Length: 236
Image 1 (cartoon, helix red, strand yellow):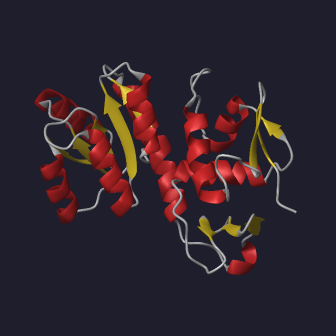
Image 2: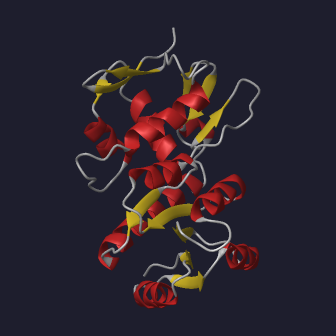
């Protein structure tokens, strides 16, 4: 039985009611609110494990709220959008959403996406094993602790990674100097199927380069292999 807490943020009362009933019937604890102010009040009361965040909301829109959530809390975020414009989904991923789904959606697909995001966030939050069981990997001037799911700089300051960014970085360091296609990267960093033409991987890698490259505009660690994918080249 799933016991994770899910917060639904949607201005459509029918959607809130449907999701509350459907997810509740599948064992989740669900709260549902209609705008950003109510979302913040609910989070103050109890931090959820995952937020289903509608893009079009009165007041602060979903993009603004996703940015605020990612800056303050380590929760899963799934954007729910009625827009067919790719730019809206791209911006949602840019600000740190873990996934997105378009309206109208099949509740079963949404539930599968929820389970996938929760699995990754819960793994990232799990206590790290004994340090001797971990593995630290140098990434340029940074160091990735695979056991603790942490990326730190030379002074020990942690650099925040989303669960998807960590999964991607882990895939790269475990396959150095190998060309990895987008589909291969999605397979290595996700445990469910994705659309064959999904380009969200490019957005994630752009964000990841900003965190690990000394010059993100001229990447040396994660290199683009035109027509083939990406390759991680360890610094020597």
